[in-house]
Every structure is written in structure tokens, then in C-alpha cells.
Length: 350
Image (cartoon, rainbow, N blue to C red; front, side, top):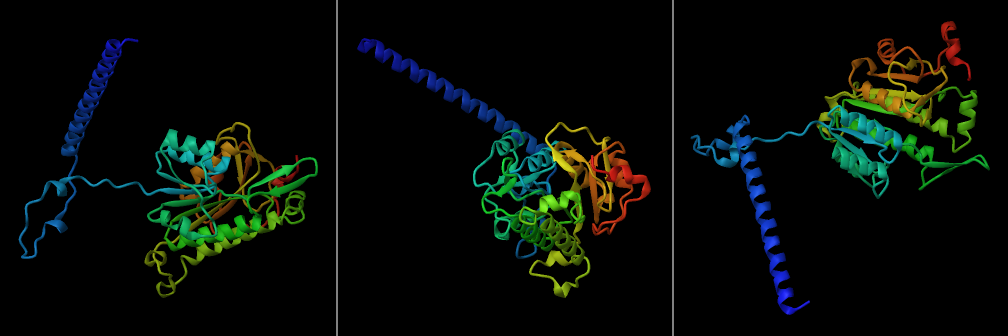
């Protein structure tokens, strides 16, 4: 190419760049003008505490004082964003317009995390250490609920029928000590609703399910210990005196209510919907449950007082969620109960 042609190309590129920058500035100015108009149309928040001068007179409000203050919604904090069930719960809450803070123990984003961030603009905290409250407790401020869906990460070797736990995870470290650490911090912060995901047959020590899963680092034993510690901490939040409270002054005045959801064997199939679930208390029913339906039940449990201070099992059935919630007994500690004759068909193994 000739020197003249090269010079002409450089001029053309410069003009196109100037045109692009000019258009961008024009759009930015237009958008800023519209934003300012919307601020003027918004109701102003009183700033009397800034207007009082030292001599008791009232100063004229400044432009800064007239800008409306934005208040974020109280968040729902989810532990287990590194798992599929945690992702499904987070999506369910986001679809309801909730502000969600998703806690992940992975140091790097997973594909599911990218979906939460890009599609829903969700705040995701990576590298959470369940045993170290300093990595998560600040996010409990003003939180209206905490959901613990974390599990000990593992892989199952079908050839040797052995479960291998990953990254130092064990049921004791995650589903007992992790639960205890998170719930203690949540109760101390005055979080009103706390939900724990657990598993059916966790109290039936002679059942096939319990014996099988308990072979792997006493998984069922530690799940139940985690439930008991969770319930104890929540109940204590309503019985202690202000003088016995910790450094958080709000913890003694705001009670925390517990909900333990014991899911049937989780499956990856498409959910059947909330009309196709059955709930019971007493830890005697058996069955499976798609993770999509478990996520829906978990989300729905936050929107009713019927699930406060309850422990219940949920499997695929035909009674419906509304009926199931309405029959729950409050204050139940999750102990096993004898199966009534009318429910014998729910207690049989498939």
C-alpha cells in the first residue's frame, strides 16, 4: 500500500473513532439527564439530622442532602452455592424477587455460579470456610433468612462401592461442625429464619438406609447431631436473658426460628411440582424427591409461619404442599415416631 493510501486509512480510522466517542458521550449525557429527572421525581428522604446547625437554626438543605437514599432489601443467605441444590434454591428465590447472597466453598466460580451471576446479578462469596465465621458472618447483617444446603463433597466409586470425600470434607466437619458454626453466627446476628436441609431416615438407626450411609464416615450420625445442635441454638435464642447475650446486642431481642427439611432420596429428574409432594413428621416415610421439588419446598417454607420450629420429611406424593404445611406440628424436635396404620404404605421400601 502507498504512503498516501496508508495516511488516508489512518485518517478514516481516526474519524470513525471520534464519531464513536461522540455518540457514546451523547448517549451518556442523555442517560444522565433522564436519571436526574427520575431523582427529582422520587420522594425525598428527610435529612433533618443533617440540617440542624450548632446554634439551633436550620440551614438550607444542600443538593447532596436531597438525593434519595437507596435501601437494599434484606437478603437471604444460602450456603451450598457450589452444589446443584444450592443453585436451584438461589434461582427460586431470585425468581421471587429476593436479594440473594450465595455462599460457595469453592475458591473459583463454577458453571452454576456463572449462571447465578450473569442471569440474576447475584452476589456470590467464594472461598467460604464453614468453620471460620469471619469468612461469612458480616453477610448476616439484616439478613431475613439463612439456608444451609451445604454437604460433605464426595464421589462414589461404583466398582468398590466406596464414597471418597473431597477437599478435606467429612460429614462431621460440614454437617455437624459447619452447621454449628453457621447457625451460632446467624442466631447471634438475630436472623429470624434459619433452614437446614437434611435427609430422611436420619433417626432410624436400624433402617437399611441409615446403616448403608453411616458406613461412610458416620454420615447419618453426624447429620442428626447437626440437626440437634441447630434446634438447640435456635431455642436458646428465645430463652436466654439479655445479660447472657454475646457481643451482639440484637441477638437477645430477635428470636431465631428453625426449619429442618428432610428430603427423600434426591434425584436429578425434572420436578413434578408442588401438588405432587407428601409431607410427614416422625421420620418413617420413604421415597425419592427431585432436587427441583426440594428447592421449591425450601423456598416456599420461608413464606409461611406454618413451618416455624418444625422438622418434617418430604417425598414425591399426591397430597400437595399446602395441605402438608397445614398439618405440621410446631416445636417438633425430629425424633422418630411410630408409623400410624394409615401411613404404612408410605413407610414401605419401594
